[in-house]
Image (cartoon, rainbow, N blue to C red; front, side, top):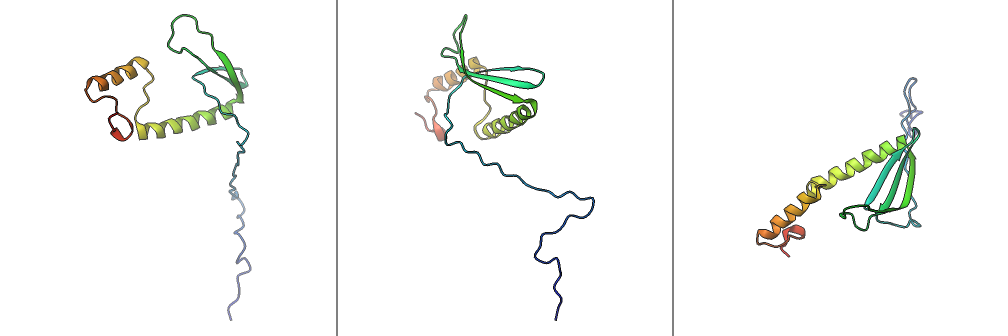
Length: 131
């Protein structure tokens, strides 16, 4: 007859000097969240906080004075801001690896669209389908 190990069936106990690793799951209830669109963001900061103002610029390519009304303001500490920066960076890297580089210069974007049009094929849609 074999003897049963007294620790069998119980989770291993950390040895002295070892830290126990725990995991945390965060569940977000976004059922009452109202989505909004923004094509403008202003970032300001104090020594303790980062302030993000989001708004809609109805004429983003107009010249002269443009008045933009900030609709949302997010205030966060620098630790949260750095985590946001990391999350956004990872998200953009995944998007660009799937769909190609995101060109921020509007003139270059317009130029590449014009080249596709002048190529005689017309604009190319999803999966390379000519529209």
